[in-house]
Length: 208
Image (cartoon, rainbow, N blue to C red; front, side, top):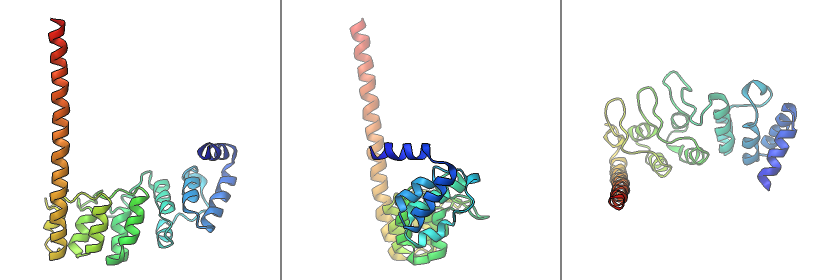
């Protein structure tokens, strides 16, 4: 019912009304409704709304920040925000350093992907490992970052030369967990395939 109400509201509202509604939600720091309203607008229709996603990250309005990225870049990653092809997560690590964990957790929860690479094929996890940001590394892994993904130098994050001992130890555990998950998925797929083959064979025998 709640969704139906908002769908009806958006259908009845003009662009100007939606814009004012979005601005009001932003003033009220209503992250959920501000982001939802913003996504109903097209970029060419928005001229009076501040789309500075980093500004909203500082206010803990992570869904709104993700919506700004999505509106401006037509995806959830903010890829290509600079000449190096960095994503929003790369940018936040560069700006906030070792203190980026909270912002990263918020952006990942809002749908920003954890493992998208830049032009050097470095994921945010490669960057955080290289800089020795253990808390950031933990936040990324908890948010779904792939510790097995390799960069342009064919290195996984744990293999970054400047990674600290603590970072490497944590990533080793993350790699082992990721490998175990992959093996379990492969086994499940194989079991499904074998069951399918057995079912097909049984059908053929019945037909004969």
